[in-house]
Image (cartoon, rainbow, N blue to C red; front, side, top):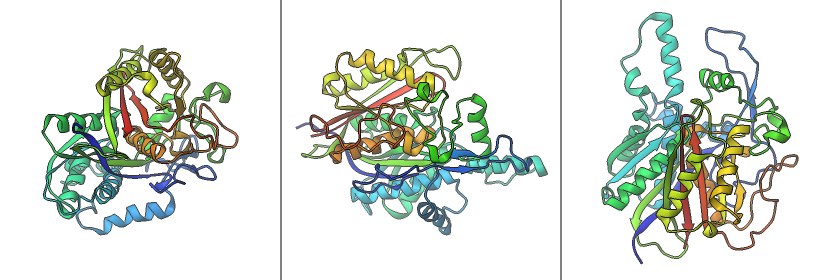
Length: 406
């Protein structure tokens, strides 16, 4: 067999906690909470509380505990989430202490937004900022933080590459990893995405766009594919990260491989718009299939980007129909559990895909909301071996990944 890009390990952290076994995507109730986000200058926030998908308390405490390490103490929460996920990926791959250099690529839409907001508030109040502000808030710091941590604990970093392409940022990082590994620029690569967008300014930005869910946290506020039935957009922010240990190798039976990546771009009517037939989705999916040498009929399931917005969900479903024709793969989403993690969403979609490839049953949908999710407890008509996942963001970009097991 020829060498391929093999997934040796994965690490993820999200509103579901850390990745964990067969129950990871089958919780018994909503994972959302309601929070009030207020800038320091406004004691009474406009709009009141909003639903968000935040880390569970125990997982949040674990991430916060990383600040006990001197090198991690000043970092933004997004960097801490990335480090936590990367450590788990390295451990799962058995790469601790290895002398083989590892390239690092991390995607994020907003970057160190918490640190940036705090620093700017301090600047407005006093006209000065700390010398560490620039290095800690540049988007490149996220990949560098993972690389520094790798050097300090587990191995040798050969490069730190940052990606910021709105909500497809993590898939951009995965695409770079595939290109580097196939070209021989790296033998091992840590790639993924991280996002910590639960901040006052980020929440305000998404509410200003007019897509934030009006539903309460206990009412399954993020409902991909159900905007028409709900009567409103149901976008909900979430936080999280997922990182994957990738290497160029001859795969063995049971290995998961990144068989193809694809990218698409379209010129929509506005910076936040999308074409009705999702042209960028179509291009990305077709390129991923072509690179993998697969036909639409080979795909068992599609994990949709589906942020819970009427325009976005409808366009993506139209793109899937255009690409797959009469073939009808299962259409799935994890945002009804995780919310929209922006630049980390594509990486968490890949984590979901790996879970689907490992376990035979699909996750049970929310009791009062099915959307386009497969019915609970239904065994697929054939074993899942090939899954396509999508990501897209403001500005007209989209990306797809095809992952399969042998």
